[in-house]
Length: 354
Ligand SMILES: Nc1ncnc2c1ncn2[C@@H]1O[C@H](COP(=O)(O)OP(=O)(O)O)[C@@H](O)[C@H]1O
Ligand SMILES: [Mg+2]
Figure (cartoon, rainbow, N blue to C red):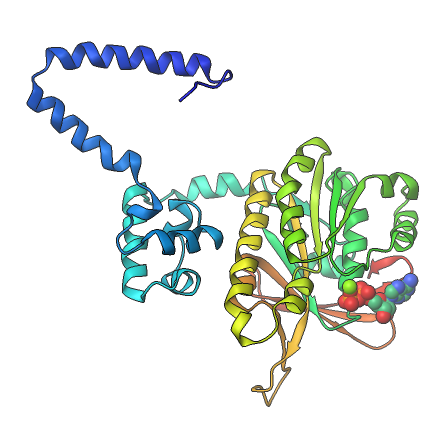
């Protein structure tokens, strides 16, 4: 292996350490040396294929499903591995346990978690009722999802947030730029101009700070998310939007037979988005379509697309409905720290407002 230039000094240190070890080892007797090697070897070189019951084929399926590290497997649920790699449930449980053991995963102090949560930024939606519902706004370091029927206002939220993100912190923004993955050709710069004007911003400047990419199919969409990382650093991106998350997947993978392929791809897409949100401390905002569930006879039969894959990956989920006139209703679903609730707001020429 060739040492990288950047790591040269580190590598040199390593070499030095190794030499020291060599000298030490020569002094020690052979038996002791063997023990040292045996103790260290398995922990260092553990691979996915070393997990009990995971052969090359399952490993490949795990990789393509986004479970590309022992960490990812260690935090997965057995049923996820069953679905993605076709493992038996017992094997999945054993593999997860082995991955956890190899990582020596333990407890993290609540204090450290709280410390990490302090670095989370909040993005105001721009309407008081909605910010209250959301505990102050959308959080960075996780995925927020809105879902609702056609014309329920999902894209309006995207336009609104594209403007809000550019406001300074004291006005509820993130003083940052926006990366916008448009999969349904529904990006409307005219709407953004109107909203920007209402917020006292120069529409031209606001549009310049939104980097839009049109995704032509699900593979392209995934590729764009992959490439996002480079742009996020270079362009001070604080908000990543995917409108819509599921549209392409839904139209490409039709029928029951393709469902597991679709879910596998969606899963790795979501995992990447989650990673990006944490790594760069940005807000990731995705929209999702709905379907009607024929098995629900009483109550609202509307259900979001993407099933558990999307449900688990989105930390905050908001269900949007139309009210009368410009009135809209947002319902908070499954928040880890806020009570479920509803807020009424309006969609007007000025965007999402009280
Ligand atoms: N300039 C506007 N003024 C008022 N309402 C608007 C305006 N533009 C769009 N809307 C409302 O938003 C709806 C479309 O919302 P949209 O975000 O495109 O829906 P979705 O993305 O959920 O399919 C329209 O039906 C209309 O009610
Ligand atoms: Mg839309």
